[in-house]
Length: 256
Image (cartoon, rainbow, N blue to C red; front, side):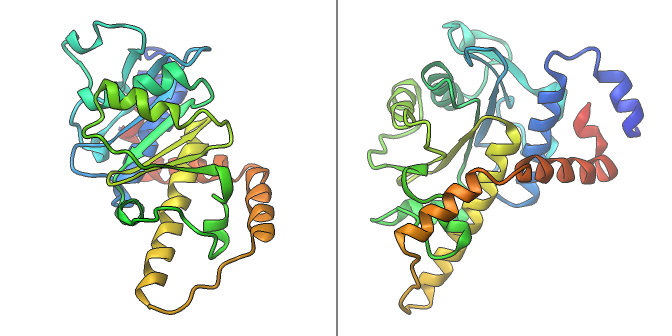
Protein backbone atom coordinates (compact mmCIF):
# COMPACT_ATOMS: atom_id res chain seq x y z
CA UNK A 1 0.00 0.00 0.00
CA UNK A 2 1.55 3.32 -1.00
CA UNK A 3 1.01 6.58 0.82
CA UNK A 4 -1.50 7.90 -1.74
CA UNK A 5 -3.67 4.83 -1.18
CA UNK A 6 -3.38 5.21 2.60
CA UNK A 7 -4.54 8.84 2.39
CA UNK A 8 -7.43 8.01 0.08
CA UNK A 9 -8.72 5.14 2.19
CA UNK A 10 -8.55 6.77 5.59
CA UNK A 11 -8.59 10.55 5.62
CA UNK A 12 -12.34 10.95 5.04
CA UNK A 13 -13.39 8.16 7.41
CA UNK A 14 -11.57 8.86 10.67
CA UNK A 15 -12.35 11.73 13.03
CA UNK A 16 -9.27 13.79 13.96
CA UNK A 17 -7.26 12.10 11.21
CA UNK A 18 -4.29 14.51 11.19
CA UNK A 19 -3.93 14.21 14.97
CA UNK A 20 -4.12 10.41 14.71
CA UNK A 21 -1.32 10.36 12.15
CA UNK A 22 0.92 12.49 14.36
CA UNK A 23 0.27 10.28 17.37
CA UNK A 24 0.75 7.04 15.42
CA UNK A 25 4.09 8.37 14.21
CA UNK A 26 5.13 9.19 17.77
CA UNK A 27 4.29 5.67 18.94
CA UNK A 28 6.23 3.99 16.15
CA UNK A 29 9.24 6.25 16.52
CA UNK A 30 9.32 5.78 20.29
CA UNK A 31 9.58 2.04 19.64
CA UNK A 32 12.40 2.61 17.14
CA UNK A 33 14.26 4.53 19.85
CA UNK A 34 13.71 1.65 22.32
CA UNK A 35 11.93 4.00 24.70
CA UNK A 36 8.76 1.91 25.00
CA UNK A 37 8.25 -0.96 27.43
CA UNK A 38 6.69 -4.17 26.07
CA UNK A 39 2.97 -3.44 25.61
CA UNK A 40 2.79 -0.93 28.47
CA UNK A 41 3.08 2.90 28.51
CA UNK A 42 0.62 5.32 26.97
CA UNK A 43 0.31 8.53 24.96
CA UNK A 44 -2.81 10.69 24.71
CA UNK A 45 -3.85 13.79 22.80
CA UNK A 46 -6.77 16.09 23.61
CA UNK A 47 -9.10 16.75 20.67
CA UNK A 48 -11.88 18.77 22.34
CA UNK A 49 -11.63 22.42 23.29
CA UNK A 50 -11.76 21.69 27.02
CA UNK A 51 -9.30 18.81 26.65
CA UNK A 52 -11.48 16.13 28.22
CA UNK A 53 -11.95 14.16 25.00
CA UNK A 54 -8.73 12.59 23.85
CA UNK A 55 -7.11 9.98 21.63
CA UNK A 56 -5.11 7.21 23.29
CA UNK A 57 -3.45 3.94 22.33
CA UNK A 58 -5.48 0.73 22.60
CA UNK A 59 -4.88 -1.69 25.44
CA UNK A 60 -1.65 -3.69 25.20
CA UNK A 61 -0.75 -3.10 21.55
CA UNK A 62 2.95 -2.74 20.83
CA UNK A 63 3.95 0.81 19.93
CA UNK A 64 5.64 -0.39 16.73
CA UNK A 65 2.30 -1.68 15.34
CA UNK A 66 -0.04 1.19 16.18
CA UNK A 67 -1.90 2.77 13.27
CA UNK A 68 -3.98 5.94 13.08
CA UNK A 69 -7.21 3.92 13.02
CA UNK A 70 -6.24 1.97 16.15
CA UNK A 71 -6.39 4.97 18.45
CA UNK A 72 -9.27 5.11 20.93
CA UNK A 73 -11.41 8.22 21.28
CA UNK A 74 -11.98 8.60 25.03
CA UNK A 75 -14.22 10.92 27.05
CA UNK A 76 -12.48 11.66 30.34
CA UNK A 77 -15.83 12.43 31.95
CA UNK A 78 -17.49 9.15 30.96
CA UNK A 79 -17.65 6.83 34.02
CA UNK A 80 -18.57 3.90 31.75
CA UNK A 81 -15.29 4.03 29.82
CA UNK A 82 -13.85 0.92 31.45
CA UNK A 83 -17.02 -1.03 30.52
CA UNK A 84 -16.44 -0.48 26.81
CA UNK A 85 -15.55 -3.59 24.75
CA UNK A 86 -12.43 -1.71 23.63
CA UNK A 87 -11.68 -0.34 27.11
CA UNK A 88 -8.22 1.17 27.54
CA UNK A 89 -5.65 -0.10 29.99
CA UNK A 90 -6.94 0.76 33.49
CA UNK A 91 -3.74 2.56 34.48
CA UNK A 92 -3.84 4.56 31.24
CA UNK A 93 -7.41 5.57 32.05
CA UNK A 94 -6.51 6.43 35.64
CA UNK A 95 -3.52 8.61 34.77
CA UNK A 96 -4.45 10.21 31.46
CA UNK A 97 -8.13 10.88 32.14
CA UNK A 98 -7.24 12.67 35.38
CA UNK A 99 -4.68 14.84 33.62
CA UNK A 100 -7.00 15.72 30.74
CA UNK A 101 -9.81 16.59 33.17
CA UNK A 102 -7.68 18.63 35.53
CA UNK A 103 -4.87 20.14 33.42
CA UNK A 104 -6.32 21.85 30.31
CA UNK A 105 -2.91 23.05 29.10
CA UNK A 106 -1.65 19.44 28.97
CA UNK A 107 -3.00 18.76 25.48
CA UNK A 108 -0.59 15.92 24.73
CA UNK A 109 0.59 13.54 27.46
CA UNK A 110 3.36 10.98 26.97
CA UNK A 111 4.29 8.49 29.67
CA UNK A 112 7.26 6.14 29.26
CA UNK A 113 9.68 4.08 31.34
CA UNK A 114 12.63 4.93 29.09
CA UNK A 115 15.92 3.59 30.46
CA UNK A 116 17.92 6.66 31.38
CA UNK A 117 15.01 8.80 32.55
CA UNK A 118 13.92 5.92 34.78
CA UNK A 119 17.43 5.61 36.19
CA UNK A 120 17.17 9.31 37.02
CA UNK A 121 13.76 8.70 38.62
CA UNK A 122 15.37 6.02 40.79
CA UNK A 123 18.01 8.30 42.32
CA UNK A 124 17.46 9.84 45.74
CA UNK A 125 17.86 13.23 44.04
CA UNK A 126 15.95 12.84 40.79
CA UNK A 127 16.34 16.40 39.53
CA UNK A 128 18.12 16.74 36.19
CA UNK A 129 20.89 19.33 36.72
CA UNK A 130 22.00 21.66 33.90
CA UNK A 131 25.31 20.07 32.91
CA UNK A 132 24.94 20.55 29.14
CA UNK A 133 22.72 22.30 26.63
CA UNK A 134 20.11 19.53 26.50
CA UNK A 135 19.71 19.28 30.26
CA UNK A 136 19.54 23.07 30.58
CA UNK A 137 16.42 23.01 28.38
CA UNK A 138 14.51 21.65 31.40
CA UNK A 139 15.90 24.04 34.01
CA UNK A 140 13.78 25.34 36.87
CA UNK A 141 10.01 24.87 36.96
CA UNK A 142 10.05 23.00 33.63
CA UNK A 143 10.62 19.81 35.60
CA UNK A 144 8.76 18.59 38.66
CA UNK A 145 9.46 15.51 40.75
CA UNK A 146 6.81 13.18 42.09
CA UNK A 147 8.27 12.04 45.42
CA UNK A 148 5.27 9.98 46.52
CA UNK A 149 4.90 6.96 44.24
CA UNK A 150 1.91 5.02 45.53
CA UNK A 151 1.61 2.03 43.19
CA UNK A 152 0.10 1.50 39.76
CA UNK A 153 -1.54 4.59 38.30
CA UNK A 154 -5.18 3.79 38.87
CA UNK A 155 -7.63 6.66 39.34
CA UNK A 156 -6.52 7.79 42.81
CA UNK A 157 -2.88 7.89 41.73
CA UNK A 158 -3.82 9.72 38.53
CA UNK A 159 -5.67 12.42 40.45
CA UNK A 160 -2.67 12.91 42.73
CA UNK A 161 -0.20 13.13 39.85
CA UNK A 162 -2.35 15.58 37.91
CA UNK A 163 -2.03 18.12 40.71
CA UNK A 164 1.74 18.25 40.17
CA UNK A 165 1.23 19.62 36.66
CA UNK A 166 -0.72 22.74 37.64
CA UNK A 167 2.13 25.15 36.80
CA UNK A 168 1.84 25.96 33.05
CA UNK A 169 5.65 26.10 32.86
CA UNK A 170 6.01 22.43 33.80
CA UNK A 171 7.02 20.25 30.88
CA UNK A 172 8.22 17.01 32.48
CA UNK A 173 7.18 15.13 35.59
CA UNK A 174 9.94 12.86 36.85
CA UNK A 175 7.91 10.12 38.48
CA UNK A 176 10.05 8.88 41.34
CA UNK A 177 10.55 5.08 41.30
CA UNK A 178 8.51 4.92 38.09
CA UNK A 179 9.44 6.80 34.89
CA UNK A 180 8.60 10.13 33.30
CA UNK A 181 5.54 11.94 32.01
CA UNK A 182 5.94 14.69 29.40
CA UNK A 183 3.28 17.21 28.37
CA UNK A 184 2.94 19.64 25.49
CA UNK A 185 0.43 21.55 23.41
CA UNK A 186 0.91 19.24 20.41
CA UNK A 187 2.26 15.79 19.62
CA UNK A 188 5.32 17.41 18.07
CA UNK A 189 6.06 19.46 21.18
CA UNK A 190 5.57 16.60 23.65
CA UNK A 191 7.55 14.11 21.56
CA UNK A 192 10.42 16.56 21.07
CA UNK A 193 10.57 17.17 24.81
CA UNK A 194 10.47 13.46 25.58
CA UNK A 195 13.27 12.80 23.11
CA UNK A 196 15.51 15.54 24.50
CA UNK A 197 14.80 14.67 28.11
CA UNK A 198 15.84 11.06 27.56
CA UNK A 199 18.99 12.23 25.73
CA UNK A 200 19.80 14.63 28.58
CA UNK A 201 19.19 11.95 31.21
CA UNK A 202 21.51 9.58 29.32
CA UNK A 203 24.27 12.21 29.28
CA UNK A 204 23.82 12.87 33.00
CA UNK A 205 23.77 9.19 34.00
CA UNK A 206 26.88 8.46 31.94
CA UNK A 207 28.63 11.52 33.37
CA UNK A 208 27.93 10.15 36.86
CA UNK A 209 29.52 6.84 35.83
CA UNK A 210 32.87 8.60 35.38
CA UNK A 211 32.98 9.46 39.08
CA UNK A 212 34.53 12.80 38.20
CA UNK A 213 33.22 16.27 39.16
CA UNK A 214 30.50 17.60 36.89
CA UNK A 215 30.73 20.90 35.02
CA UNK A 216 27.40 22.45 36.06
CA UNK A 217 26.10 25.51 34.24
CA UNK A 218 25.26 28.57 36.32
CA UNK A 219 21.61 29.17 37.05
CA UNK A 220 21.77 32.33 34.95
CA UNK A 221 23.05 30.55 31.84
CA UNK A 222 20.76 27.55 32.38
CA UNK A 223 17.72 29.84 32.62
CA UNK A 224 18.85 31.64 29.45
CA UNK A 225 19.21 28.36 27.53
CA UNK A 226 15.81 27.14 28.74
CA UNK A 227 14.10 30.38 27.68
CA UNK A 228 15.84 30.36 24.30
CA UNK A 229 14.78 26.76 23.75
CA UNK A 230 11.17 27.50 24.71
CA UNK A 231 11.06 30.11 21.95
CA UNK A 232 13.16 28.37 19.32
CA UNK A 233 11.08 28.57 16.13
CA UNK A 234 9.61 25.45 14.55
CA UNK A 235 12.10 22.85 15.74
CA UNK A 236 9.59 20.44 17.26
CA UNK A 237 7.31 20.61 14.22
CA UNK A 238 10.21 19.97 11.84
CA UNK A 239 11.40 17.06 13.99
CA UNK A 240 8.04 15.31 13.75
CA UNK A 241 7.63 16.17 10.07
CA UNK A 242 10.96 14.52 9.27
CA UNK A 243 10.00 11.40 11.24
CA UNK A 244 6.71 11.17 9.35
CA UNK A 245 8.58 11.55 6.06
CA UNK A 246 10.80 8.60 6.96
CA UNK A 247 7.81 6.48 7.98
CA UNK A 248 6.01 7.49 4.78
CA UNK A 249 8.89 5.88 2.87
CA UNK A 250 9.48 2.87 5.08
CA UNK A 251 6.12 1.92 6.68
CA UNK A 252 3.26 4.13 5.43
CA UNK A 253 0.72 1.76 6.96
CA UNK A 254 1.02 3.81 10.17
CA UNK A 255 -1.32 6.32 8.51
CA UNK A 256 -4.09 3.76 7.94
